[in-house]
Image (cartoon, rainbow over all chains, first blue to last red; front, side):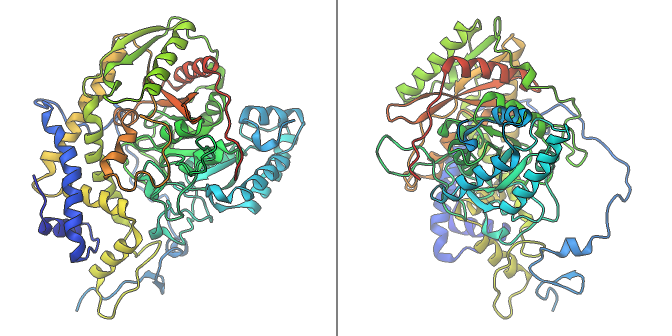
Length: 95
Length: 495
Protein backbone atom coordinates (compact mmCIF):
# COMPACT_ATOMS: atom_id res chain seq x y z
CA UNK A 1 0.00 0.00 0.00
CA UNK A 2 1.47 3.30 -1.02
CA UNK A 3 0.07 6.71 -0.30
CA UNK A 4 0.19 9.29 -3.06
CA UNK A 5 -0.20 13.05 -2.71
CA UNK A 6 -3.91 13.05 -3.36
CA UNK A 7 -4.48 10.46 -0.60
CA UNK A 8 -2.33 12.53 1.76
CA UNK A 9 -4.44 15.57 0.92
CA UNK A 10 -7.63 13.58 1.55
CA UNK A 11 -6.38 12.38 4.95
CA UNK A 12 -5.42 15.93 5.94
CA UNK A 13 -8.89 17.07 4.94
CA UNK A 14 -10.55 14.30 6.97
CA UNK A 15 -8.39 15.23 9.98
CA UNK A 16 -9.28 18.93 9.52
CA UNK A 17 -5.64 19.95 9.42
CA UNK A 18 -4.60 22.44 6.76
CA UNK A 19 -1.59 21.20 4.82
CA UNK A 20 -0.15 23.41 2.07
CA UNK A 21 0.22 21.77 -1.34
CA UNK A 22 4.00 22.02 -1.29
CA UNK A 23 4.11 20.06 1.99
CA UNK A 24 2.14 17.11 0.60
CA UNK A 25 5.01 15.12 -0.99
CA UNK A 26 6.97 15.06 2.28
CA UNK A 27 3.82 14.13 4.21
CA UNK A 28 3.06 11.27 1.83
CA UNK A 29 6.65 10.01 2.30
CA UNK A 30 6.26 10.08 6.09
CA UNK A 31 2.98 8.17 5.88
CA UNK A 32 4.55 5.55 3.66
CA UNK A 33 7.45 5.16 6.04
CA UNK A 34 5.16 4.60 9.03
CA UNK A 35 2.74 2.40 7.13
CA UNK A 36 5.67 0.33 5.89
CA UNK A 37 6.53 -0.30 9.53
CA UNK A 38 2.92 -1.21 10.32
CA UNK A 39 2.75 -3.63 7.38
CA UNK A 40 4.65 -6.16 9.54
CA UNK A 41 1.31 -6.96 11.12
CA UNK A 42 0.38 -8.81 7.94
CA UNK A 43 2.84 -11.56 8.93
CA UNK A 44 0.70 -12.51 11.93
CA UNK A 45 -1.91 -15.24 11.64
CA UNK A 46 -5.00 -13.65 13.19
CA UNK A 47 -7.49 -16.22 11.91
CA UNK A 48 -10.18 -16.72 14.54
CA UNK A 49 -8.69 -14.15 16.94
CA UNK A 50 -11.13 -11.62 18.39
CA UNK A 51 -10.17 -7.94 18.15
CA UNK A 52 -9.56 -6.65 21.68
CA UNK A 53 -12.29 -4.37 22.98
CA UNK A 54 -11.25 -4.14 26.64
CA UNK A 55 -7.83 -4.91 28.07
CA UNK A 56 -9.19 -5.86 31.50
CA UNK A 57 -12.06 -8.32 31.60
CA UNK A 58 -14.45 -5.91 33.28
CA UNK A 59 -17.92 -4.98 32.20
CA UNK A 60 -18.55 -1.31 31.79
CA UNK A 61 -20.79 -0.21 34.61
CA UNK A 62 -24.21 1.19 33.95
CA UNK A 63 -25.68 4.09 35.85
CA UNK A 64 -29.09 5.60 36.18
CA UNK A 65 -29.93 8.01 33.37
CA UNK A 66 -30.47 11.10 35.44
CA UNK A 67 -29.25 14.66 35.67
CA UNK A 68 -26.47 14.94 38.24
CA UNK A 69 -24.84 18.15 37.15
CA UNK A 70 -25.58 21.41 35.40
CA UNK A 71 -26.19 25.16 35.68
CA UNK A 72 -22.54 25.96 35.05
CA UNK A 73 -22.80 28.03 31.90
CA UNK A 74 -20.13 30.48 33.03
CA UNK A 75 -17.65 27.72 33.79
CA UNK A 76 -18.40 25.91 30.54
CA UNK A 77 -17.76 29.06 28.54
CA UNK A 78 -14.85 30.36 30.62
CA UNK A 79 -12.17 28.94 28.32
CA UNK A 80 -13.87 29.59 24.99
CA UNK A 81 -11.82 31.65 22.50
CA UNK A 82 -15.03 33.46 21.57
CA UNK A 83 -18.16 33.37 23.76
CA UNK A 84 -21.03 35.80 23.36
CA UNK A 85 -24.29 36.17 25.22
CA UNK A 86 -23.95 32.78 26.84
CA UNK A 87 -23.04 30.89 23.68
CA UNK A 88 -19.93 29.63 21.88
CA UNK A 89 -19.40 31.86 18.86
CA UNK A 90 -18.17 30.48 15.52
CA UNK A 91 -17.88 31.85 11.98
CA UNK A 92 -21.01 31.85 9.89
CA UNK A 93 -22.05 28.26 9.13
CA UNK A 94 -24.97 28.77 6.71
CA UNK A 95 -25.21 31.19 3.82
CA UNK B 1 19.90 16.76 57.94
CA UNK B 2 20.64 16.75 54.19
CA UNK B 3 19.11 19.52 52.10
CA UNK B 4 15.36 19.14 52.42
CA UNK B 5 14.62 18.98 48.69
CA UNK B 6 16.94 15.96 48.43
CA UNK B 7 14.85 13.85 50.80
CA UNK B 8 12.77 10.92 49.64
CA UNK B 9 9.04 10.93 50.31
CA UNK B 10 9.51 8.37 53.07
CA UNK B 11 12.31 10.34 54.76
CA UNK B 12 10.37 13.59 54.57
CA UNK B 13 7.19 11.97 55.86
CA UNK B 14 9.03 10.52 58.83
CA UNK B 15 10.75 13.85 59.54
CA UNK B 16 7.40 15.65 59.41
CA UNK B 17 5.82 13.18 61.80
CA UNK B 18 8.70 13.51 64.24
CA UNK B 19 8.47 17.28 64.04
CA UNK B 20 12.04 17.57 62.69
CA UNK B 21 10.86 19.77 59.83
CA UNK B 22 7.71 21.37 58.46
CA UNK B 23 5.95 21.25 55.13
CA UNK B 24 6.63 24.97 54.76
CA UNK B 25 10.38 24.34 55.10
CA UNK B 26 10.28 21.44 52.66
CA UNK B 27 8.26 23.48 50.19
CA UNK B 28 10.55 26.52 50.46
CA UNK B 29 13.58 24.31 49.80
CA UNK B 30 11.97 22.88 46.67
CA UNK B 31 10.81 26.27 45.39
CA UNK B 32 14.36 27.56 45.78
CA UNK B 33 15.75 24.56 43.91
CA UNK B 34 13.16 25.06 41.15
CA UNK B 35 14.06 28.73 40.70
CA UNK B 36 17.74 27.80 40.41
CA UNK B 37 17.02 25.15 37.78
CA UNK B 38 15.45 27.05 34.89
CA UNK B 39 18.20 25.59 32.69
CA UNK B 40 16.49 22.20 33.01
CA UNK B 41 13.16 23.64 31.79
CA UNK B 42 11.37 21.02 33.88
CA UNK B 43 8.80 23.21 35.65
CA UNK B 44 6.87 25.15 33.02
CA UNK B 45 4.14 26.65 35.20
CA UNK B 46 5.28 27.42 38.74
CA UNK B 47 2.66 27.75 41.48
CA UNK B 48 4.60 29.02 44.52
CA UNK B 49 1.68 30.86 46.20
CA UNK B 50 -0.60 27.85 45.92
CA UNK B 51 2.23 25.66 47.20
CA UNK B 52 2.84 27.78 50.30
CA UNK B 53 -0.90 27.87 51.02
CA UNK B 54 -1.11 24.07 50.82
CA UNK B 55 2.07 23.65 52.87
CA UNK B 56 0.64 25.74 55.71
CA UNK B 57 -2.60 23.76 55.61
CA UNK B 58 -0.59 20.52 55.68
CA UNK B 59 1.40 21.67 58.70
CA UNK B 60 -1.89 22.34 60.51
CA UNK B 61 -3.09 18.84 59.66
CA UNK B 62 0.14 17.27 60.85
CA UNK B 63 -0.10 19.21 64.10
CA UNK B 64 -3.67 18.02 64.54
CA UNK B 65 -2.50 14.44 64.09
CA UNK B 66 -4.50 13.96 60.88
CA UNK B 67 -1.74 13.26 58.42
CA UNK B 68 -1.86 10.64 55.65
CA UNK B 69 1.51 9.55 54.21
CA UNK B 70 1.60 12.18 51.46
CA UNK B 71 0.62 15.05 53.76
CA UNK B 72 2.95 18.02 53.45
CA UNK B 73 5.13 16.47 50.73
CA UNK B 74 5.99 18.78 47.79
CA UNK B 75 5.50 17.22 44.36
CA UNK B 76 5.31 18.22 40.70
CA UNK B 77 2.37 17.49 38.41
CA UNK B 78 2.76 16.65 34.73
CA UNK B 79 1.14 19.26 32.47
CA UNK B 80 -1.22 16.55 31.14
CA UNK B 81 -3.27 16.65 34.38
CA UNK B 82 -6.03 19.24 34.57
CA UNK B 83 -5.46 21.37 37.65
CA UNK B 84 -8.13 23.85 38.65
CA UNK B 85 -7.24 27.45 37.86
CA UNK B 86 -3.69 26.50 36.85
CA UNK B 87 -2.62 26.32 33.17
CA UNK B 88 -2.95 22.76 31.86
CA UNK B 89 -1.73 22.69 28.30
CA UNK B 90 -0.49 19.16 27.60
CA UNK B 91 2.57 21.06 26.31
CA UNK B 92 0.56 22.08 23.25
CA UNK B 93 0.05 25.45 21.63
CA UNK B 94 -3.57 24.52 20.95
CA UNK B 95 -4.33 24.62 24.69
CA UNK B 96 -2.61 27.96 25.22
CA UNK B 97 -4.38 29.86 27.99
CA UNK B 98 -6.50 26.89 29.09
CA UNK B 99 -7.21 26.98 32.82
CA UNK B 100 -9.51 24.13 33.78
CA UNK B 101 -12.51 24.78 35.98
CA UNK B 102 -11.96 21.34 37.54
CA UNK B 103 -9.25 19.11 38.98
CA UNK B 104 -8.26 15.65 37.70
CA UNK B 105 -9.16 12.81 40.05
CA UNK B 106 -5.53 11.78 40.58
CA UNK B 107 -4.28 15.29 41.39
CA UNK B 108 -7.35 15.80 43.60
CA UNK B 109 -6.54 12.61 45.53
CA UNK B 110 -2.97 13.82 46.01
CA UNK B 111 -4.24 17.22 47.16
CA UNK B 112 -6.79 15.64 49.50
CA UNK B 113 -3.99 13.61 51.07
CA UNK B 114 -2.26 16.91 51.83
CA UNK B 115 0.53 16.83 49.25
CA UNK B 116 1.79 20.18 47.97
CA UNK B 117 1.76 20.93 44.23
CA UNK B 118 4.80 23.02 43.27
CA UNK B 119 3.82 23.51 39.63
CA UNK B 120 3.32 21.85 36.27
CA UNK B 121 5.96 19.80 34.53
CA UNK B 122 7.21 19.76 30.95
CA UNK B 123 6.37 16.85 28.66
CA UNK B 124 6.08 15.92 24.99
CA UNK B 125 3.07 17.53 23.30
CA UNK B 126 -0.04 15.46 24.17
CA UNK B 127 2.42 12.85 25.57
CA UNK B 128 3.48 11.98 22.02
CA UNK B 129 7.23 11.54 22.06
CA UNK B 130 10.11 9.79 23.75
CA UNK B 131 12.53 12.67 24.28
CA UNK B 132 10.50 15.70 25.43
CA UNK B 133 11.46 17.43 22.17
CA UNK B 134 7.90 17.91 20.88
CA UNK B 135 6.90 20.29 23.71
CA UNK B 136 5.63 23.80 22.98
CA UNK B 137 7.71 24.91 25.99
CA UNK B 138 10.94 23.67 24.42
CA UNK B 139 13.04 20.70 25.52
CA UNK B 140 13.22 19.54 29.09
CA UNK B 141 16.88 18.81 29.86
CA UNK B 142 18.29 15.92 31.87
CA UNK B 143 20.41 16.80 34.90
CA UNK B 144 22.72 13.97 33.82
CA UNK B 145 25.71 14.48 31.51
CA UNK B 146 28.17 12.17 29.80
CA UNK B 147 31.15 12.68 32.08
CA UNK B 148 32.54 16.17 31.49
CA UNK B 149 30.84 16.55 28.10
CA UNK B 150 28.44 19.48 28.35
CA UNK B 151 26.13 18.26 25.56
CA UNK B 152 22.52 18.41 26.73
CA UNK B 153 20.83 15.03 27.09
CA UNK B 154 17.18 14.07 26.93
CA UNK B 155 15.45 13.13 30.18
CA UNK B 156 13.29 10.86 28.03
CA UNK B 157 9.64 11.29 27.30
CA UNK B 158 6.92 11.88 27.38
CA UNK B 159 7.17 12.52 31.15
CA UNK B 160 10.54 14.25 30.65
CA UNK B 161 9.93 17.21 32.94
CA UNK B 162 8.80 14.86 35.72
CA UNK B 163 11.93 12.71 35.37
CA UNK B 164 14.28 15.69 35.20
CA UNK B 165 12.68 17.37 38.22
CA UNK B 166 12.81 14.26 40.41
CA UNK B 167 16.37 13.37 39.38
CA UNK B 168 17.54 16.95 40.05
CA UNK B 169 15.78 17.07 43.46
CA UNK B 170 13.49 19.95 42.46
CA UNK B 171 10.61 18.07 44.06
CA UNK B 172 10.33 14.95 46.17
CA UNK B 173 8.32 13.10 43.52
CA UNK B 174 6.13 13.77 40.50
CA UNK B 175 3.18 12.39 38.60
CA UNK B 176 3.67 10.92 35.17
CA UNK B 177 1.50 9.19 32.60
CA UNK B 178 2.37 6.22 30.45
CA UNK B 179 0.74 5.23 27.14
CA UNK B 180 3.65 3.31 25.59
CA UNK B 181 6.49 3.80 28.08
CA UNK B 182 6.22 7.48 29.03
CA UNK B 183 6.85 6.86 32.75
CA UNK B 184 9.30 3.96 32.55
CA UNK B 185 11.60 5.20 29.76
CA UNK B 186 12.26 8.63 31.35
CA UNK B 187 12.67 6.99 34.76
CA UNK B 188 15.31 4.67 33.27
CA UNK B 189 17.08 7.58 31.55
CA UNK B 190 17.35 9.59 34.78
CA UNK B 191 18.08 6.99 37.45
CA UNK B 192 14.64 7.28 39.03
CA UNK B 193 11.83 4.84 39.75
CA UNK B 194 8.61 4.90 37.73
CA UNK B 195 5.63 2.57 37.84
CA UNK B 196 2.75 2.27 35.40
CA UNK B 197 0.00 0.45 37.28
CA UNK B 198 -2.52 -1.99 35.83
CA UNK B 199 -4.92 -0.35 33.38
CA UNK B 200 -7.87 0.79 35.49
CA UNK B 201 -5.96 1.32 38.76
CA UNK B 202 -5.73 5.11 38.45
CA UNK B 203 -8.67 7.15 37.24
CA UNK B 204 -8.10 8.81 33.87
CA UNK B 205 -10.70 11.49 34.61
CA UNK B 206 -9.28 14.97 34.07
CA UNK B 207 -6.10 13.73 32.41
CA UNK B 208 -5.86 14.99 28.83
CA UNK B 209 -6.58 11.88 26.76
CA UNK B 210 -4.05 10.52 24.25
CA UNK B 211 -4.96 6.84 23.65
CA UNK B 212 -7.71 5.97 26.11
CA UNK B 213 -7.27 2.19 26.09
CA UNK B 214 -3.56 2.53 26.92
CA UNK B 215 -3.19 5.66 29.10
CA UNK B 216 -2.40 5.23 32.81
CA UNK B 217 -1.05 7.63 35.42
CA UNK B 218 1.65 6.65 37.88
CA UNK B 219 4.27 8.06 40.24
CA UNK B 220 7.89 8.96 39.42
CA UNK B 221 10.02 8.84 42.52
CA UNK B 222 13.50 8.51 44.04
CA UNK B 223 12.94 5.03 45.45
CA UNK B 224 10.69 1.99 45.22
CA UNK B 225 9.31 2.72 48.69
CA UNK B 226 8.31 6.20 47.53
CA UNK B 227 6.60 4.70 44.47
CA UNK B 228 4.57 2.44 46.80
CA UNK B 229 3.57 5.37 49.03
CA UNK B 230 2.56 7.69 46.21
CA UNK B 231 0.87 5.04 44.05
CA UNK B 232 -1.43 4.10 46.90
CA UNK B 233 -2.68 7.69 47.12
CA UNK B 234 -3.18 7.95 43.34
CA UNK B 235 -5.16 4.69 42.96
CA UNK B 236 -8.77 3.86 43.62
CA UNK B 237 -12.16 3.55 42.01
CA UNK B 238 -13.66 6.63 40.41
CA UNK B 239 -17.24 6.62 39.11
CA UNK B 240 -16.22 9.36 36.65
CA UNK B 241 -13.97 6.93 34.71
CA UNK B 242 -15.99 3.98 33.43
CA UNK B 243 -12.81 1.88 33.07
CA UNK B 244 -11.69 2.53 36.64
CA UNK B 245 -11.51 -0.71 38.62
CA UNK B 246 -13.72 -1.24 41.64
CA UNK B 247 -11.03 -2.93 43.65
CA UNK B 248 -9.66 -2.23 47.10
CA UNK B 249 -6.23 -0.55 47.09
CA UNK B 250 -3.79 -2.49 49.27
CA UNK B 251 -1.17 -0.93 51.53
CA UNK B 252 1.63 -1.21 48.97
CA UNK B 253 4.32 0.04 51.33
CA UNK B 254 3.50 -2.67 53.90
CA UNK B 255 4.11 -5.27 51.18
CA UNK B 256 7.78 -4.22 50.80
CA UNK B 257 9.43 -7.03 52.72
CA UNK B 258 12.25 -7.58 50.26
CA UNK B 259 11.61 -11.30 50.56
CA UNK B 260 11.26 -12.81 47.08
CA UNK B 261 12.31 -16.36 47.93
CA UNK B 262 10.53 -18.86 45.71
CA UNK B 263 9.29 -16.26 43.24
CA UNK B 264 9.57 -17.26 39.60
CA UNK B 265 11.04 -14.54 37.38
CA UNK B 266 10.68 -14.96 33.61
CA UNK B 267 13.33 -13.84 31.13
CA UNK B 268 11.66 -13.43 27.72
CA UNK B 269 13.97 -14.50 24.92
CA UNK B 270 12.28 -12.22 22.38
CA UNK B 271 13.55 -9.15 24.26
CA UNK B 272 17.12 -10.07 23.28
CA UNK B 273 17.19 -7.79 20.25
CA UNK B 274 19.71 -7.86 17.43
CA UNK B 275 22.30 -5.17 17.96
CA UNK B 276 21.47 -4.70 21.64
CA UNK B 277 24.38 -2.88 23.30
CA UNK B 278 26.59 -5.14 25.42
CA UNK B 279 26.04 -2.91 28.42
CA UNK B 280 22.27 -3.44 28.30
CA UNK B 281 22.73 -7.17 27.88
CA UNK B 282 25.07 -7.27 30.89
CA UNK B 283 22.77 -5.13 33.03
CA UNK B 284 19.94 -7.53 32.25
CA UNK B 285 21.88 -10.69 33.14
CA UNK B 286 23.30 -8.99 36.26
CA UNK B 287 19.73 -8.13 37.30
CA UNK B 288 18.66 -11.75 36.86
CA UNK B 289 21.64 -12.88 38.97
CA UNK B 290 20.69 -10.42 41.72
CA UNK B 291 17.14 -11.72 41.88
CA UNK B 292 18.45 -15.28 41.88
CA UNK B 293 20.81 -14.47 44.74
CA UNK B 294 17.81 -13.08 46.63
CA UNK B 295 16.14 -16.47 46.35
CA UNK B 296 14.06 -16.15 43.19
CA UNK B 297 14.00 -18.80 40.50
CA UNK B 298 14.96 -17.56 37.04
CA UNK B 299 13.19 -19.19 34.11
CA UNK B 300 13.41 -18.64 30.37
CA UNK B 301 10.07 -17.77 28.82
CA UNK B 302 8.75 -16.91 25.39
CA UNK B 303 6.46 -14.03 24.45
CA UNK B 304 6.24 -14.87 20.76
CA UNK B 305 4.35 -11.80 19.50
CA UNK B 306 6.70 -9.22 21.04
CA UNK B 307 7.99 -8.14 17.63
CA UNK B 308 4.51 -7.01 16.61
CA UNK B 309 3.83 -4.85 19.65
CA UNK B 310 5.28 -1.61 18.27
CA UNK B 311 3.55 -1.85 14.88
CA UNK B 312 0.24 -2.67 16.63
CA UNK B 313 0.78 0.25 18.98
CA UNK B 314 1.40 2.62 16.07
CA UNK B 315 -2.01 1.71 14.68
CA UNK B 316 -4.02 1.67 17.91
CA UNK B 317 -2.52 4.72 19.63
CA UNK B 318 -2.81 7.09 16.63
CA UNK B 319 -6.31 5.79 15.91
CA UNK B 320 -7.46 6.61 19.43
CA UNK B 321 -5.56 9.89 19.38
CA UNK B 322 -7.20 11.01 16.15
CA UNK B 323 -10.56 10.51 17.83
CA UNK B 324 -9.59 12.05 21.20
CA UNK B 325 -7.93 15.09 19.62
CA UNK B 326 -10.96 15.85 17.45
CA UNK B 327 -12.18 17.97 20.38
CA UNK B 328 -9.51 20.61 19.72
CA UNK B 329 -11.55 22.62 17.27
CA UNK B 330 -10.96 26.19 18.38
CA UNK B 331 -14.49 26.50 19.76
CA UNK B 332 -14.71 25.34 23.36
CA UNK B 333 -11.26 25.93 24.84
CA UNK B 334 -7.72 26.78 23.94
CA UNK B 335 -6.54 28.72 20.97
CA UNK B 336 -8.32 29.63 17.75
CA UNK B 337 -6.35 30.68 14.66
CA UNK B 338 -6.77 34.19 13.30
CA UNK B 339 -9.14 33.91 10.39
CA UNK B 340 -9.29 35.74 7.07
CA UNK B 341 -12.39 37.54 5.91
CA UNK B 342 -14.80 35.05 4.45
CA UNK B 343 -13.36 32.02 6.26
CA UNK B 344 -16.08 29.60 7.30
CA UNK B 345 -16.15 27.02 10.05
CA UNK B 346 -14.13 24.42 8.11
CA UNK B 347 -11.31 26.92 7.53
CA UNK B 348 -11.45 27.73 11.24
CA UNK B 349 -10.98 24.06 12.17
CA UNK B 350 -8.24 23.48 9.61
CA UNK B 351 -6.22 26.60 10.40
CA UNK B 352 -6.63 26.21 14.17
CA UNK B 353 -5.42 22.61 14.12
CA UNK B 354 -2.58 23.32 11.67
CA UNK B 355 -1.29 26.15 13.86
CA UNK B 356 -2.06 24.59 17.21
CA UNK B 357 -0.71 21.05 16.79
CA UNK B 358 3.00 20.41 16.42
CA UNK B 359 4.44 18.24 13.69
CA UNK B 360 4.49 14.91 15.54
CA UNK B 361 0.93 15.36 16.81
CA UNK B 362 -0.33 16.25 13.32
CA UNK B 363 1.42 13.21 11.91
CA UNK B 364 -0.13 10.86 14.45
CA UNK B 365 -3.61 12.35 14.10
CA UNK B 366 -3.41 11.90 10.34
CA UNK B 367 -2.04 8.34 10.55
CA UNK B 368 -4.89 7.57 12.95
CA UNK B 369 -7.39 9.14 10.59
CA UNK B 370 -6.04 7.04 7.75
CA UNK B 371 -6.13 3.67 9.57
CA UNK B 372 -9.71 4.34 10.66
CA UNK B 373 -10.91 5.55 7.27
CA UNK B 374 -13.37 3.62 5.13
CA UNK B 375 -11.71 0.71 3.39
CA UNK B 376 -8.71 0.49 5.74
CA UNK B 377 -10.38 -0.05 9.09
CA UNK B 378 -10.26 -3.84 8.87
CA UNK B 379 -6.83 -4.07 7.29
CA UNK B 380 -5.17 -1.85 9.89
CA UNK B 381 -7.24 -1.12 12.97
CA UNK B 382 -9.03 -4.44 13.39
CA UNK B 383 -5.89 -6.39 12.55
CA UNK B 384 -3.93 -4.43 15.17
CA UNK B 385 -6.61 -5.13 17.77
CA UNK B 386 -6.40 -8.84 16.96
CA UNK B 387 -2.62 -8.77 17.35
CA UNK B 388 -3.15 -6.98 20.67
CA UNK B 389 -5.28 -9.93 21.84
CA UNK B 390 -2.38 -12.25 20.96
CA UNK B 391 0.16 -10.07 22.79
CA UNK B 392 -1.95 -10.13 25.92
CA UNK B 393 -2.34 -13.90 25.60
CA UNK B 394 1.46 -14.30 25.48
CA UNK B 395 1.64 -12.78 28.96
CA UNK B 396 -1.36 -14.75 30.24
CA UNK B 397 0.32 -17.98 29.14
CA UNK B 398 3.54 -17.03 30.94
CA UNK B 399 1.69 -16.20 34.15
CA UNK B 400 -0.42 -19.36 33.87
CA UNK B 401 2.83 -21.35 33.72
CA UNK B 402 3.71 -20.02 37.16
CA UNK B 403 5.78 -16.93 36.41
CA UNK B 404 5.32 -14.19 39.05
CA UNK B 405 7.13 -11.35 37.27
CA UNK B 406 9.10 -10.74 34.08
CA UNK B 407 12.48 -9.02 33.96
CA UNK B 408 13.53 -7.02 30.88
CA UNK B 409 15.70 -4.01 30.08
CA UNK B 410 13.69 -0.77 30.37
CA UNK B 411 15.20 0.88 27.29
CA UNK B 412 17.40 -0.21 24.37
CA UNK B 413 20.09 2.38 25.28
CA UNK B 414 21.05 5.06 27.78
CA UNK B 415 19.77 8.62 27.26
CA UNK B 416 20.71 10.20 23.92
CA UNK B 417 21.56 13.82 23.25
CA UNK B 418 18.87 16.39 22.57
CA UNK B 419 18.79 16.93 18.81
CA UNK B 420 20.68 13.72 18.06
CA UNK B 421 17.57 11.98 16.75
CA UNK B 422 16.25 14.94 14.75
CA UNK B 423 17.50 13.56 11.46
CA UNK B 424 16.30 10.04 12.19
CA UNK B 425 12.93 8.96 10.80
CA UNK B 426 10.04 8.78 13.29
CA UNK B 427 10.19 5.00 13.43
CA UNK B 428 13.72 5.19 14.92
CA UNK B 429 12.34 7.32 17.75
CA UNK B 430 9.45 4.90 18.24
CA UNK B 431 11.95 2.08 18.91
CA UNK B 432 12.69 3.65 22.30
CA UNK B 433 9.49 2.06 23.56
CA UNK B 434 10.24 -1.43 22.26
CA UNK B 435 10.48 -2.97 25.76
CA UNK B 436 7.71 -0.99 27.41
CA UNK B 437 4.88 -0.82 24.87
CA UNK B 438 3.91 -4.51 25.23
CA UNK B 439 2.94 -3.78 28.84
CA UNK B 440 0.45 -1.06 27.85
CA UNK B 441 -1.05 -3.25 25.13
CA UNK B 442 -1.58 -6.02 27.72
CA UNK B 443 -2.79 -3.59 30.41
CA UNK B 444 -0.23 -4.89 32.93
CA UNK B 445 1.72 -3.12 35.67
CA UNK B 446 5.37 -2.37 34.88
CA UNK B 447 8.07 -0.66 36.90
CA UNK B 448 11.47 0.76 35.93
CA UNK B 449 14.21 0.48 38.54
CA UNK B 450 17.66 2.08 38.21
CA UNK B 451 20.21 -0.72 38.12
CA UNK B 452 23.54 0.64 36.92
CA UNK B 453 25.56 3.18 34.95
CA UNK B 454 26.92 2.89 31.42
CA UNK B 455 30.55 3.56 30.47
CA UNK B 456 29.79 7.28 30.16
CA UNK B 457 28.28 7.44 33.61
CA UNK B 458 24.63 7.53 32.52
CA UNK B 459 21.89 5.62 34.36
CA UNK B 460 20.44 2.40 32.97
CA UNK B 461 17.21 0.83 34.17
CA UNK B 462 15.60 -2.56 34.31
CA UNK B 463 11.90 -3.22 33.94
CA UNK B 464 9.81 -5.66 35.95
CA UNK B 465 6.39 -6.61 34.60
CA UNK B 466 3.76 -8.01 36.96
CA UNK B 467 0.40 -9.72 36.93
CA UNK B 468 -2.76 -7.61 36.68
CA UNK B 469 -3.63 -5.88 39.98
CA UNK B 470 -0.49 -7.28 41.65
CA UNK B 471 1.34 -3.95 41.98
CA UNK B 472 2.17 -4.76 45.62
CA UNK B 473 3.96 -7.99 44.75
CA UNK B 474 5.62 -6.31 41.76
CA UNK B 475 6.88 -3.43 43.91
CA UNK B 476 8.26 -5.91 46.41
CA UNK B 477 10.28 -7.62 43.68
CA UNK B 478 11.40 -4.17 42.50
CA UNK B 479 12.39 -3.41 46.09
CA UNK B 480 14.55 -6.55 46.24
CA UNK B 481 16.17 -5.56 42.93
CA UNK B 482 16.75 -2.01 44.17
CA UNK B 483 18.39 -3.32 47.36
CA UNK B 484 20.65 -5.66 45.42
CA UNK B 485 21.60 -3.14 42.71
CA UNK B 486 22.41 -0.48 45.30
CA UNK B 487 22.10 2.36 42.79
CA UNK B 488 23.08 5.57 44.58
CA UNK B 489 24.54 7.73 41.78
CA UNK B 490 23.25 11.29 41.45
CA UNK B 491 23.90 13.82 38.69
CA UNK B 492 26.61 16.41 39.38
CA UNK B 493 24.95 19.79 39.72
CA UNK B 494 25.87 22.00 36.70
CA UNK B 495 22.66 23.98 36.33
